[in-house]
Length: 439
Image (cartoon, rainbow, N blue to C red; front, side, top):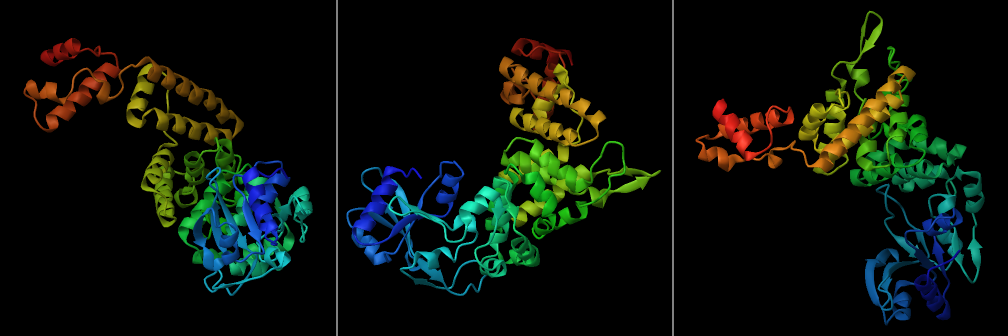
């Protein structure tokens, strides 16, 4: 591993004081995968008071001293590095964090309490890689395996269940048999976890390269937080537009949009109400109203997981509108820009492209039309053409001077904007005033 200088210096100071020190966990895993870690965590045999003594000339931040974690901010580069004392964990009564910890001088004991073998490795330039549980080989074999007994690990901290799904989605790992059994057996423990923590892991899962596979294989686990997804598994759509069951279609569309949170959440929810809305008419599947119902489900689910209101509103709109007919002619696109705005319209086009890409082959011809809408929308936005009230050459004050009052003003402005968009009037003050006089 090629450690940053600030990390090397911290490890060197701890070693010079007669203590062991290593980088541990995710930074070791990422480095072995050829990635640059976003941050580095250091584990040491030094207890908190000893860490403070070693770094007496640095700024110290108490991250969680009772659990052995202290952050050191060096004067040379102002970087913050978290240092944690080797420890063993006590009982986990809340299925999230240990009630207490015991400090130890034994690195192996510290590594043995960690979640997965790929996260239970340590490294220093002095000792090289320390891999007691075979994490390096599991990385090479693309295996996700718990350290020790899987049921014990997941009972200690139920969030590890979602972390497992997230790691598999991000890294393309396959769950070892006993670890998978424990995930399914203990999935209901996710109810004990704060919704915000589940949300963070779920978002990262959706953004993973292998999200499609994980959604299809672990829908029952996701169903703890999103029970509506369960009915989608194996649900035959019974119409010519679809070749996949609802769950598979959803999963494929998630992976078909760019890796952006709003888009991937929109695809996860866009057809989630289909089983509820299904009607068989002349042996043909119909899902009338499913877009609006899916938007309702999306809102409920996202509120449960404490998503911010802005994200909820964006995703609701995309889900509710994902079946809307989008035409690429100039007037239609201006109306769409007025309704959605440029950013949301571009996202809606991406949603429809992904949706059609996971349907029967003949439907995929529609994708070109969606791309044409994207091109036309960008062209109109660049040109400065009028498609909003804000860019109209007249405003409310102008209409007030002409004698309009209250709701009349808004109605008249909207009428004028429609005339400009449809080409019945030019967007100049003179042309609009003349139009008003003629009416």
